[in-house]
Image 1 (cartoon, one colour):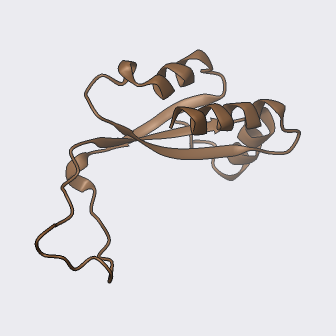
Image 2 (tube, helix red, strand yellow):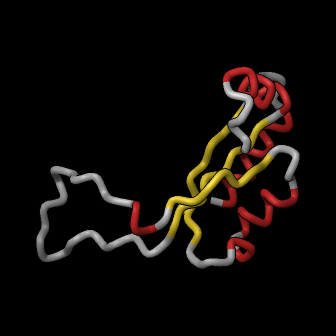
Amino acid sequence: MLLATRHAIYSAAVSTEETATFILLPSWNKMTTTNPYASLCRKYPHICKFLGTIPSDQLQYVKVPFWNNIQIPLSKHSWKLQIIAIWNTKGRVCLNAHNKDWLK
């Protein structure tokens, strides 16, 4: 997750094209400060923003046809998901053109 976040930040920084990446990353506790990717995002507030959180009780597995083992059920989610946006200037301008309130 840290590497994916770092890659998105690096890509946004060096790309000459419009770039925006939206990532859903787990947050295992109430303090996002302990997550390395959250610390990385806070170092670049001009291109990273936490857009919101999906609570664990709102997450559901899709029923997959190959997982029908009643003896070993899929576990319940015990973490929430952070929604993070990472962009470059051209990407933000493009997103603002479509919806000026996307970052609010």
